Image (tube, rainbow, N blue to C red; front, side, top):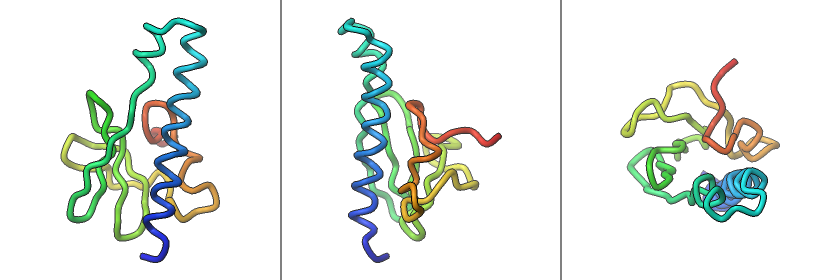
Length: 105
């Protein structure tokens, strides 16, 4: 997929910023609280999906075939419903919360 790597890196950086900004706002100067909320995202690439992990859980999945941003249904599988796309005008970040892709409303 054209520009997938660049779009994915931009999405990952934006997602990490959402988490860091939230943690900084919640901490209000407390290092202990900052450590609790400031999750660092890591990437594990599979055959079809990129799994985005925090230290304790699966945070999101990215479908490498189409760029869809998916909430985790379990540790090994994403939800079937897309929460955004890294190729859309928002780079897939409009549905991202500090805790991962938003629930459907």
